[in-house]
Length: 196
Image 1 (tube, rainbow, N blue to C red):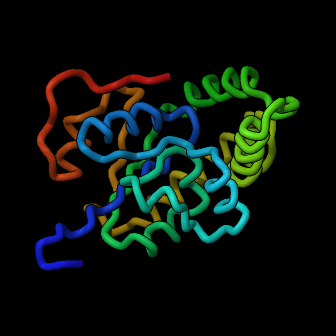
Image 2: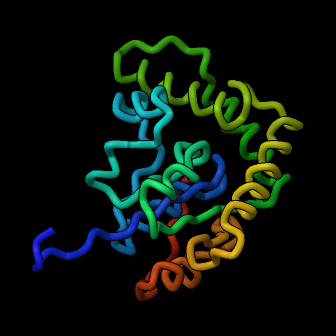
């Protein structure tokens, strides 16, 4: 780094489960000046998932990642990108389960892709569903267990590191008033995005 070059900005990772507001948080982070990718599902992401090293090449040109792409790898990402900030999106469990049931029914993984791009996207989806939820299909008891385990594991991992982890409930109306101070940036005008 040259003397005049700015230090690299810290990364921001949203490690919420599916249907907890991760897409809305990714959009909000962009508004706050952090270009975060939501659920990358290209060849580079798939190659990284297969390697299991969390060295997503996307992070060479973006400020972070959001959604279940982060879930299996947040301890590795924390080590690879020291000083990063993590946002755990939370949602009422029963409401979350209803949303997941609907989402899984609308987005099955037993389809036959017609293009290479669609095939890669489907393979990413299958990989992450298996890695995070233990299978391709929605099973309420399994999802409830995964939800509780994930929230508990993240809280334990970041125990004593309040400056590094924000628990955010965007589906319950929490937004910029908590996210902006956590990142040390001004609260922007306008409503917090709600992207389905």
